[in-house]
Length: 75
Image 1: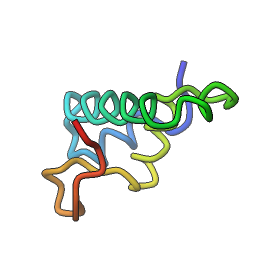
Image 2: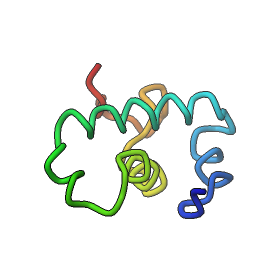
Image 3: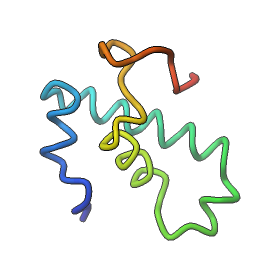
C-alpha cells in the first residue's frame, strides 16, 4: 500500500482526474524503467513510487497543465 505521497494530494495536483494521474504515473514509470534501470535495481523504491514522488513535488506535470513548459515524458 502506498502511503507517501498521499493519493488524495496527487489527485488534486491533476485537477481531480484519477485517470490522468494513472496515465501520468504509468508513463513516467515506464520512462524511468527505460532510462535508469541500473539505479532502479539498487534503489529500495520502485519506479512507480519515484514517479509518484516526482508528481507530488511537481517535477513532472501533465502536458496539458498550465505548469508544463515542455514534455518531460517521451513516448
